Amino acid sequence: MTSEDFFDNIQQHYNRQLPFVAYRKPNEAEVKALLQKDDSLNYVKYFTENGFVFAPFDDREHAVLIPIENSEGVKTDSVIPANPNSYREGIPSIESELLSDSKEHHISLVQSGIDAITSGYFQKVVVSRKETVNYSEANSLQLFKRLLNAYTSAFVYCWYHPKTGLWLGATPETFLKIDGKRLSTMALAGTQVYKGTLDVHWEDKEKAEQQFVTDYLEHSLKALTERIYLSETKTVKAGNLLHLQTNISGFLKEDQGIDRIISVLHPTPAVCGLPKNTTKQFILENENYKREFYTGFLGELNLKTTMSPRSSRRNIEDRAYTMTRNTTQLFVNLRCMQLQESKAIIYVGGGITKDSVPENEWQETVNKSLVMKNIL
Image 1: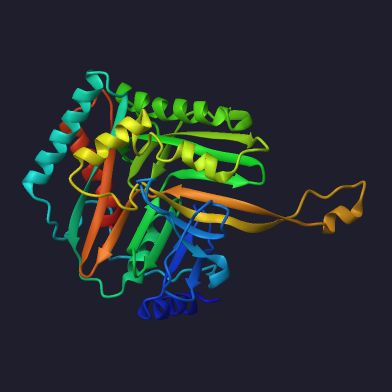
Image 2 (image 1 turned 135 degrees about the vertical axis):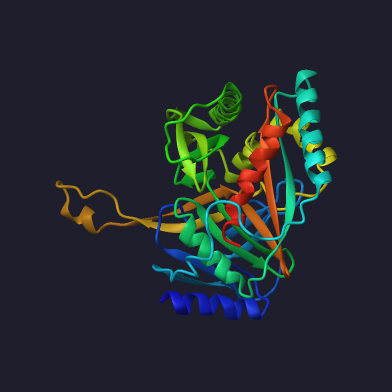
């Protein structure tokens, strides 16, 4: 399908106020969409369903599903640039309803987190805020195109349901990938502004933050897998930011279902803290807003993939043999925003350890907000 036809289909669906999701995986060209045929609100019950899942931060609430059996799938391999010169890296010239008391509240929240860590209540906590920005874009899909053009190495998406709203994002973080029995995830933490090189110095605070996430994932997955492997930690670029990343993989035990894996991992220390239940309660009680789908997860759930094994010289028929298996690929919903009429609600946060400096943590959220502001 041509890019023009692809976006026309989505726009017509949106005009009818019917649910859809359009997305592109990291470093791929193909953009896919699922167009739900009615406006019903479908929930995930056991994570055995097939479709695209959109889950909130609070795991006590329902994850929403666009089911494959009640949707039309469309895709395109090329995207026509949308006003490529209308966004830029740096401070955008847009109006932001960011009041001084918002900064004061966030700095106070960070300090409360540091005090709780010092008192021994938890080891790390992730605190966040939202920022409302006025924008004048008449066609919301133009913003999605700009995200596709600007952030090729991220999972880029546009989600709409009349009962949950319109969300867009470009997230750098894989939550969970299951391909057959093979599981993979990543520990992503630590943040600094990209200044033209990946050869940078990381402070002890960022290293400790990333190690907390890595250790938690490794410990949690050991009980679910036969073998587990950790890559070396490396610096990666995501938009205008750098992070520390460790890839983690393993092979699932026979008796482990995806619902069990998700319940163990979500929310991860990268978006919540350690220990999970204590820090989650701190977040719910002390952040002055509801995160909704920010720091939840989203992606393909149990979609069938056709695989072609390596050809065998011993049996020429193997070259024509194919097999089908379910794959799940989920991403943490970071670097995202929700659109409401002429306003964009941008969500940003950061990990707090005993070595955090409140003013620096505030500036980190400002830097992260540019990922979305740059395309407005």
